[in-house]
Length: 401
Image (cartoon, rainbow, N blue to C red; front, side, top):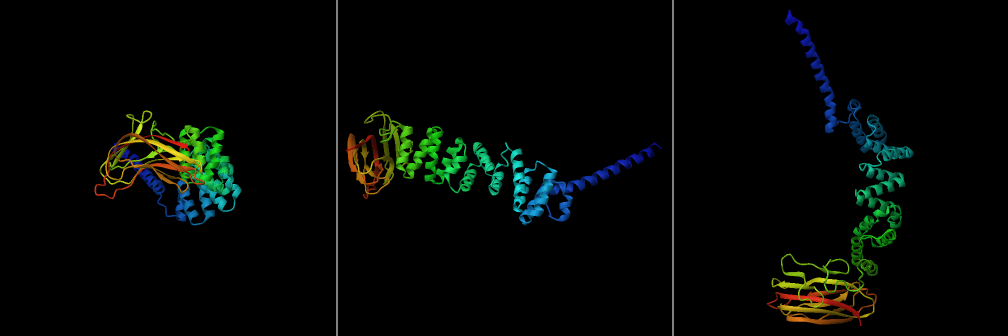
């Protein structure tokens, strides 16, 4: 009798487990489709997944790409009705409303999402894109400054603003926070928009003095674009130099702007170094060591210097050498940076010599505002053509005649 009493209870448990198993299978099947996004996009499935916001969003996107905005809007509404914080669906709903001609409704939705997600990165960029389409300028500018202040999508944001204002840099500047002008200046330099950058710089300096690294980088950029006068004005402001820069190599070579520029070769053909022993003037000189490995065409040390047009100048410099081989030694040459019509060379440096001074006299052509001073060596045509030895240079001076 005791055994028989327990039979109904066990049957009840079994029935309950069967019901639970059926319910689990029934419930998990749609969950699996939602989780792995394996949709058939049929009407029956859409109805079965009507309580899953993610599925309704997927069906809305499918309808949108099928160019069915009304159907897409229905699915997006269903998605946000199930999850009011589903902002991707809200934004897509605003987009479909705009496509159907309901512009005010789209603006209301976009304003709602922008206010709720005011301090959230995630949706700032899609909000900007939609605001651009709907002509919501304040939202564009607000989101742009927010993204720039957090170093997010800076290139895309500036490109959108520049396109929005048809390339008018003054209009872009008018909506940017002052702290973001340096980022905009860098973007303009990156894309070679020199005229636009020349408008941004005075606006930056009117608000505050930009950091030295920004100023020197911009002067370097302008010099590369052959905007000599503007470049020198900025260079002088930050370095105090308006003639030759670092003429005696007393400071490290920066390779920037009007300073010396030099580079070596990885194969060890020659080495360039600042040395603080036996200088012609001051404490330092520049030493170039050739290792006898190549018949090199040397042009790896130079400086661009600002000058006045139609003016007579004298360049003086000191040099010494030790064991320079081959018939082709080194020499200093001068040529126009922004204008042709000028080329002068100094005496050739060969063999072994103690410190001595040489000079080059020249007149700048009309409209020439910058020259290049360069240490040079032409390849030799002789059998023993590989150059070996050392050269020191120091104490460059550029003076009016």
